[in-house]
Amino acid sequence: MEKIAHRLDTRVVFNENREFGDIAMFAGHSDNGTPHISIVVDDVVLTVRVDSGIRSGFNRMNKNSFCMELAHEATHLEKSKAFLAGMNRAQRIQEEFRVYKKLEPVVVELTNKKEPLDKEHVEIYKIISTCRGATACSAFTEYFSKRTKSIPGFPTK
Image 1: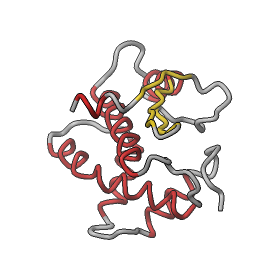
Image 2 (image 1 turned 45 degrees about the vertical axis):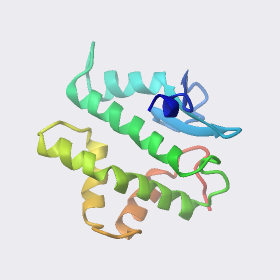
Image 3 (image 1 turned 30 degrees about the horizontal axis):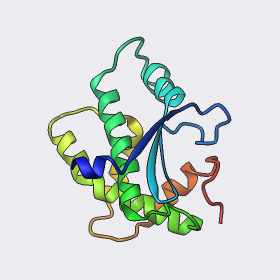
Image 4 (image 1 turned 45 degrees about the horizontal axis):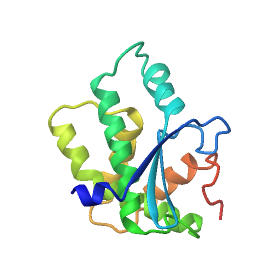
């Protein structure tokens, strides 16, 4: 496990120019074969403080969402050293579906334990649950296509 941990680099960044999109708590990428996860501090604060209305500390929903987003980006990084490089829009949406589908058991476990999740995760996993056993899902593609229209760097074609 320690060997794996040394291959992942984390960075704390700010989303001043919105290069990570409107709200992206994390961004995964690879530089010269080294996987990185950037923690986008201003968007973490925005999500926790503004969207959740929490003035100090973190509540269970914030912690669960933070962990789910981190696991999401880490799951992307297991796929390829050239993280998402050269993918067109359909391939990128398919990759998002793969990651959300892979993390579905975690969401089911959290839900069974009555752990709170933010409304976006709840919405996405309601859609994922209708795609049982599928490798592609038109409902997810439609939802995610609408959601990603304003994300800089997300393929448009």
